[in-house]
Every structure is written in C-alpha cells, then in structure tokens.
Length: 188
Image (cartoon, rainbow, N blue to C red; front, top):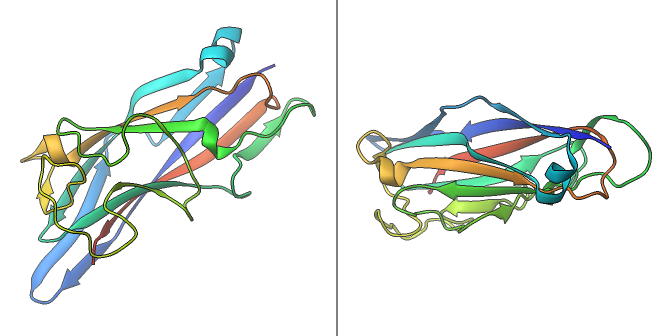
C-alpha cells in the first residue's frame, strides 16, 4: 500500500490604504510552493513524515496591525483532493492528518507545537483573531500583531512552518493533494 501526497502552498494577503498614511501588509514565501510526502515504507506509515522548515513566511506590516491565519482549501470540504487511487479499500484522508507548527525566535505564535489543519472556513489563527481590532501587542510577547518587518526584526516577523503527516494503515492508497492557505490581513 502506498500513499503519495502533494501539498500546494497558497499565499493570500491583502493590501489596504487608510487615510493619508499608507498601511499595508505583505509576505513572501522563501521556499517551493509544492511539497511531497511519499509514504513508501512501513516505518513512514507508522511514525509519519515530518518536514522541518517546509516553508518560511517573511512578514512586513507598515503602519498597521495584522492577523495571520491558516486553513485548507479542498474540493470536498474536510478531505484531501483525490488525484488517483490504487484500490478501493480504506478511507480517504481527512485534512486533520496534516499537522503544522509555526516557529519564530520570539515564540509569538498563538498555536504552540503541532496542531491539526482545519478548513479555511474555520481557520487556525497564528497571530490575532477573527474579532477586530485585536489589542496591539508588541514583540516579543505572544500574538505580536504590530507594524514591523522580517528584515529589521526577524525574531518576530519571520515564521518557519513545519509539516507532519502520520497516516497509519487505514487510508486508501493513492495520490492526494491539498492546498494550504496562509492568509495575512490587516486587522481593521
């Protein structure tokens, strides 16, 4: 039995201008947007595959507070997209088997350790919240959401994202894809 999964990384950000002072948020992905997990040994099914520093998010916020959240976009909500299957036994993988971890030197992520990916309709907030506006928190406190950038303060505005999948033996063998959206938006 073999499962091969491909993770497609989606970056979404919003630029905005309020009043006379330009306010914007942006980020850059410094690694490949496609990551492959190939479960081709029994050990990989049992212990999983972890890719440390799968991607790096460099954030720049000018004159504004910001929120950062993550969620999956798939055709069939809650499940990975099926490219092809190699049999009919077993279940389709849920998006929750993908675990993420956001790390930076100042430990500003609101999600500690690895957590399960959720649909984009119910995302996981790394910085900020669904409510707006959040209270301004300056680095190095948890939840930093103030103006700044990864060039002058990488410990607060540069996030390494680690990915982990432990599929077990109950999934249908095949090739699956999932798109993970990292969303950076002004906290208005």
